[in-house]
Length: 172
Image (cartoon, rainbow, N blue to C red; front, side, top):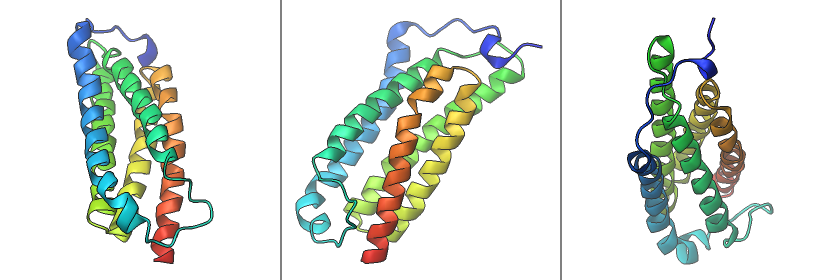
């Protein structure tokens, strides 16, 4: 029996289309986040009661820059791990869909929390995002373990963000 890691691979996408497919959705997510966050940091966010474990504001863009780079690298690896046929192909497609799904939730969280100031709804979105990231890691593991490992720091950061979102919701 062949495991997914050893399943016959489809011819890889040529390098540039694969890079674009991996980087573009992550870049769009990052831009949406930045556009939603930046105008709200000094005013609305600064006025919120925050827990003692709230990191300094400068840490967020640094962390997200590193994480988005790792997310794009993970997606690039997953896109290169497409099986040629069989049930593995459907599972790979599900892994790609889960990857896109967690990115959509990532892109939705920042406008919900920062732009719309909906802290409770932001908590719901970030919980859903965390679950989707874990599912993406699980699905990706079958095809490319380094791609799955690249998502682990992201999952840890989003777990922390979930705790922070919940604390801010409770305090405000």
